[in-house]
Length: 247
Image (cartoon, one colour):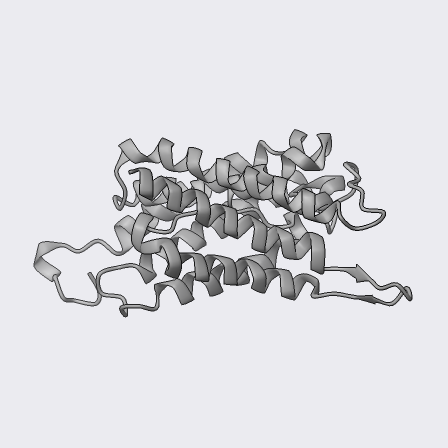
């Protein structure tokens, strides 16, 4: 268990450092001559996908590669994970995310003029709705977006890791799914689908992000539960149809 929890901590650390780090350090950069460049939304979406893809291949064989409380809860709901391990996994993920947020703050603070504005949308890669949504989306739109996308993320995870799925490709499918989720929802909430990721930067982003953090726990966890339950029914193997692709 100690090794599994360490893998979850390190994997979540890598996800937050890589994904949120790309948003904070590389999304929008102003050169010394005033020229603006950067990787933009597309680059950030790919960075999140690449961190989970590489993390799964590096650490998935140790812990299963959840790196996300919503995934852990969804896999439990889908009968893929024991209830006794849910809370320890989530605690390890949150610790890893907060550690990554602290390291990222130290790196970002090395730039002259760096400052976090708690009232700005997406401050320090934080998630938000209303005035803190990159596109000004309402709390209802943000909640719906996070629930639905997390549910489908769980469906992809459970499908890609199913016993009849092609062996060795799960990490690619999951990484691409997370990139797609970000392409859809960065303008809406700055994309959470992961309560640990949201917590890891919100604690350093100020009162605005912290005050809205409840949504980025409630909605992804609800979406994870829904996705796990749906796929538990959808991909269930009944004894009378074992081997049938419709099982």
